Amino acid sequence: MSISGRISQSAFDGSRLRVILLLDLYEGAQQEFLAAYEHMRNQVASVPGHLSDQLCQSIENPSQWLITSEWESAPPFLAWVNSEEHVETVRPMHSCVRDTRSMRYSILRETSPAQPLTRERASSATKVAARVGDGAARHALTFTVKPGSESKVAEILAGYPSPQAQVDDTTRLRRTSLFLHGNRVVRAVEVEGDLLAALRHVARQPEIREVEEAINPYLEQDRDLTDPESARVFFTRAALPAVHHVVSDRPAPEGLHRHGLRYPAKQGCGMELARLLAHQDAAAAEDPRNPVYASTVFQRDDIVVRLIDITGELDADPVASVGLKGREQDTEFERLLDGAAIGVEGSVFTDRNINRLLSHADMTPITDRSSAGS
Image (tube, rainbow, N blue to C red; front, top):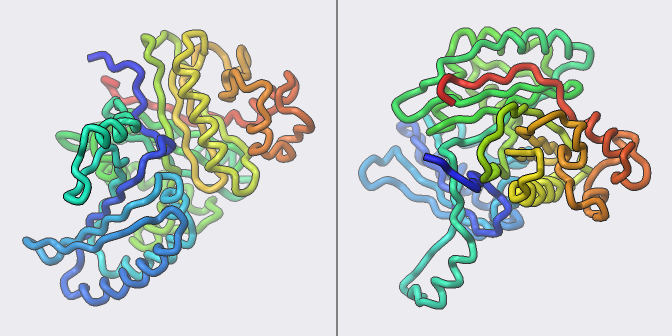
């Protein structure tokens, strides 16, 4: 079946966000967990964008709990959940919880006894349109290696084996793209089905563990993947969520090439820069002349990465490649971009500076593997 004009994920549609956290507690850990929850609840109550939360316990299995929270929109939640403050806030829960699963949903429609869903309210609710997906979840991990070890790390990662694509009856790995930018590694994955199940599946593969162990001595942040707490903290800090994904509604052209671009955001401007790029890519998807066919924007703090599938070479249309077609006279991008980091003075929108930005942002590809049938 052909799916057109699909945007499978967007943190920038303005809708409120519902976050659902499923937890399975160790026996005898309930009181410790309740104390940890009270600490977390008090901390998150003052986070900008947080509206409310609820703690629920299963009426069928007392070891199963549920935390739901509501946020003004996705961006403030993502800023909180990916912060060091969050890592430290939830740490006391780790010793109580056997397993967790987090899900995030945009609130598109709602009703309540106090406010029945009238025709006027239903019309107002449709302002947030439902998105059409392609059945895939997208996620990335990023971490840094010790300066001077980049070539050795690239050599190790280039031999990264392809894990078995089929995870279970409903989950399979679709594609893995690995890049190096300076001493920063970025690994992006596409998964059909349950993202968490796929990540756990990959982590259990002996050949994958062997590669991960091989790069451990070169990491700037120490980790021990045999220690659940160390692994949890590492992967929490390495998480680089996808905040927007768009695919053009035109037929997929032949000869698409995947590129990864990392943008130097000014301090504190990462989310705004990601939002601008997402807006631009949504507009580009409507333009049949734009060489960018598909784009995914990943963002955490001031780390902004854009993965694009493009026809032709990047430098054939550098303005479109960096995601700024049509903004040549706009100063918003210049306000958010750290031009000094790439030696750009004055307007970004000169041939020389756009090419300098493109050269700086273009990440070195290490591997890009699709599973059979993708």
